[in-house]
Amino acid sequence: MDRFRELGVALWVISPDKAEDLEKMRASMGLEFPLLRDPDLSTIRSYGILNQESGKTPHPTTVVVDVDGVVRYVRVDRDYKRRPALEEVFAAIGNLARAGAPGTLIVLNKAEGTASLIDLTSGEVVATLPTGVGPHEVAASPDGRLAVVTNYGDREQAGSSLTVLDIPAARVLRTIDLGDDHKPHGIQFLGGSTRVAVTVEDSKAVLIVDIESGRVLSRLETAQEISHMLAVTPDGRRAFVANIGSGSVTVLDLDAGKLLANIPTGEGAEGIDITPDGRQVWITNRAADTITVLDAASLAILETIPSSSFPIRARVTPDGRSVLVSHARSGDVAVFDAATRKEVRRIPMNLTAEVTEGRLFGGRFGESSVPIGILIHPNGRQAYVANANADIISIVNLDTWVTDGFLTAGKEPDGLAYSALNVKPGDGGHAR
Image 1 (cartoon, helix red, strand yellow):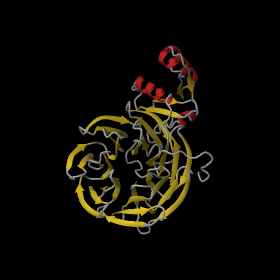
Image 2 (cartoon, rainbow, N blue to C red):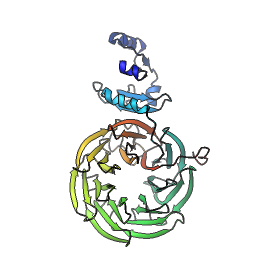
Image 3 (spheres, rainbow, N blue to C red):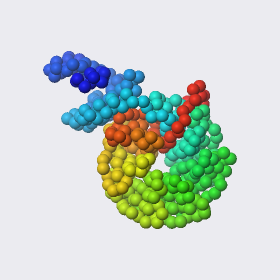
Image 4 (cartoon, helix red, strand yellow):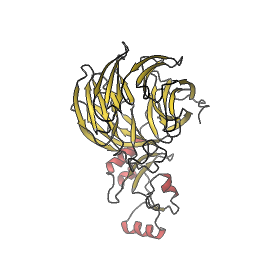
């Protein structure tokens, strides 16, 4: 209690139990803080922690809320005998005293066809912009002014367009029609701020698109099934494409415009990233529960690492020392030492999926929050993880390796990008 007082933290317990029972509990335990009754469960519901199986009781949960009522930490436990370590809670409280990371987080909300622009200093959504149906991935230009969204579509309608966003003005600049090239997905800027490389699954190809003219400049065939995500080497000369259906990685020479190799890695190859020095490629094989580490120059497989369950994205930290891998089934993020290629910890998202209808994976992973998209802030201190079945972005502190904050966006968040620019005051007139 003394430490909570020193930090200026007020404590409450919220429960649906009867008032007299709560008072007896407080007195018998000598508690110095109030036990508040929530008879209609409205407060419990607002935090998204109602046990849907019983419909009457909350999951045992620890919540840290700032003075503005914004939830900054949530720990949900299935067992009333389990509690988070106090140091974990104190870390979350300490995080509130630090200024938020600068810049704008761009979050794609797949189920509602929008992009949320979140001011990372305040943690507030400052604009919500329309995209096409099923926006899956987004890339921000090096100068942070533009972001390009791939409109993948849904089960009823395959998408074939890109949406270009002006971040400071918080508006849609244009929509680029890709014609007969359907299901655009992975995307990355090439060099400056005018060209992007984008995968198109139905065409088994990667397109190079000029986003100012809207023209497709060139097409590089992968000849693989479900060419999904891609990563470009720091020198911009090669692209590596993860192919879910073929369980492989395609290597493309962007200068020559030709296919160099198709390398089998494992069933369900999907997540992919390249180390900052350009020497290694990390690929997550979601159906095989493995990670493949590839030598980017020789194209030799250096190692295959077990990583359960359903590894779906990989992101390397800016210093190249760690690799973060999200696991959709288990609802956590694994951290690997990039040098030893060993898993050193797992970070639970501590969130429960309450609603699964109308989402890509539905209820396939039970109560998992289905963490997918990962973005690491350029400062190397925070990672943002999109929980697609919980509508929450978890903020992972990369100094302490704990989740110490949360952001809310729209329905089924997934694709993430970062801009160092903020939405200009008074703009956002096109925001919803």
